[in-house]
Length: 201
Image 1 (cartoon, helix red, strand yellow):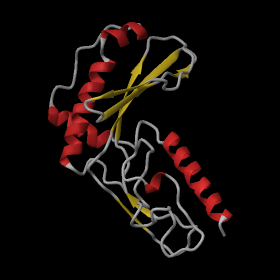
Image 2 (cartoon, rainbow, N blue to C red; image 1 turned 30 degrees about the vertical axis):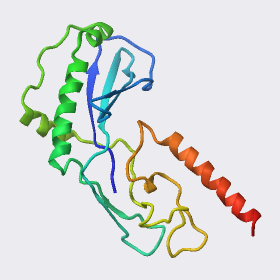
Image 3 (tube, rainbow, N blue to C red; image 1 turned 135 degrees about the horizontal axis):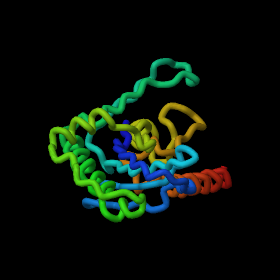
């Protein structure tokens, strides 16, 4: 079971009211390891907040998923173990440094109407502590039903007749910034296969 650990910094503008703008552009840095997004969120009549978030792609840390009941209506027990691996923690510290540089750049300062800031968190130890205290989900859960372990190559659940799983839980890694297109493609592919199988029954 995996998820992509994420860190965000929040930048407040001078009193002004901007229209909300969800993330439109994703930046990919450091050999596809970090994926960065930004948005605009009005927080009041004369206040705007701009979150700049980044996620670690392909984390090494793994969590666990356990069934807590034989009742399918009961939620399983899930633990993600974010940043448990030292490599992930080092990557997160580098990501915090990158986010700070972006948030305090002249371009962002000009856009927000504030003066550029130079008080970066230079200590790697401080960045690692920041990561541990502020890590959050990127909502790309995956790996709970991997192919070959829970489902076969046709995404049929082992030991259960008439049930397939075709979602992000079958991925060992979460591809790209958002897996929706990949999942739609996979769902259509499996749907066509099911229809063709029924034609030959």
